[in-house]
Image (cartoon, rainbow, N blue to C red):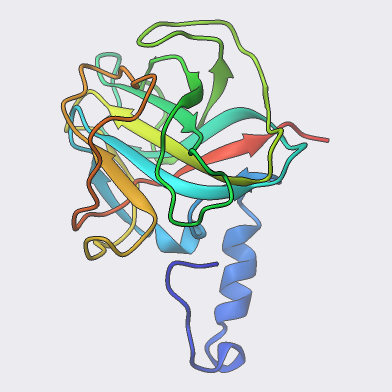
Length: 204
């Protein structure tokens, strides 16, 4: 479901055509909060803060990549990491992230900008690096995709600011570099913009 729904005539505004064009750019099997239309702006992500976004995934899905969109400011010294967390009760829409079940390696943002960046899930331990490995979802339910950056300079595709305690989003501060915690810590849901991040299925 989009984060923002248009109630006016979609046909007269051409909104449906726009949605079809934009969503055709999303890889098949991308799992995200909202759609690409919900991330029209560009901004940095606070250094040392994890963003968690809740998504719903069906059992049997195999995930192998995570994706973000780098707008500007990438460099060899500016890094990101993404991950996936479960929650205590996967059926609880009001659940919160608990244990990390997968993550990417820390990866620098050097190279081409203004484009999507895919990072493979790996068998990395907390704060470390590992080899690519896919994750099979064995239980239907809600999971949380995580994003952390180690600098406030690089800019990413982001949403407009949303009010506190409104969306299924959580924040955790005090993170060292791009170390995603094995277990989510103290969580908040303040007024904030959301960085676009998605979990990507293995192509069938």
